Length: 268
Image 1 (cartoon, rainbow, N blue to C red):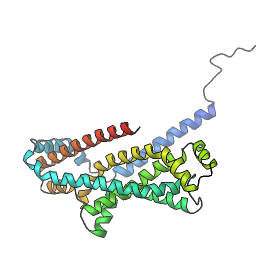
Image 2 (image 1 turned 60 degrees about the vertical axis):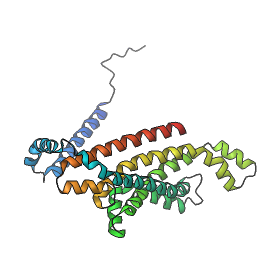
Image 3 (image 1 turned 135 degrees about the horizontal axis):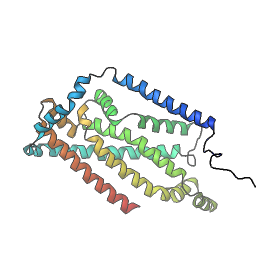
Image 4 (image 1 turned 135 degrees about the vertical axis):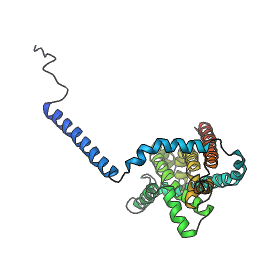
């Protein structure tokens, strides 16, 4: 029996170690190249002065202007409406898109499924702020632009997670219902929908929670909500008002996160 000493065994062969070092060298070289591109137009004097500027703005923010808080209640209500209505609209559109994208429910894997996947990818590729910027230019500023922007952004998020949930349904339940002679619509209603309803509710509430955060800044491009007040306060350098808006946004997000967690816990 041959004894193999620890010096004879290596985790990687010399060839593998060479490729590993070459890979690390290429990664470092890529990082250096990217850093040079990103920093070539940087004015470093501003960067070194940033801590002092941050302290100066922080001193101007305190104490917060609490008397400004009543003026934020309507914009806060608008923000909640943008998030809620946009989420509902996005979910209603995402449901049929998800069924068309799922392999086990699409009526056409060669035509309709690629179209549905393209819709999902397009929605996920464009940020809600960009959607709002485009919509404000098309339909004008206001809450409608914000609602549609949130809905368009939500379609991809909800559609992707939902069609994956549809594809992961238990095929045995579907086969059992099909074996009874049920029509395709009955198979869909009694075999697939009950399995995905918890996922649908959980995804929808989770997306609503995200949309609360996103809708709070859409006003920066004219889509209504707290972002409008934020933009106005920044324009006049009213930093004490900006702090009140930031605190209100933080409190709203915390409450929405708690509500979202409670709803998901009740559903799941």
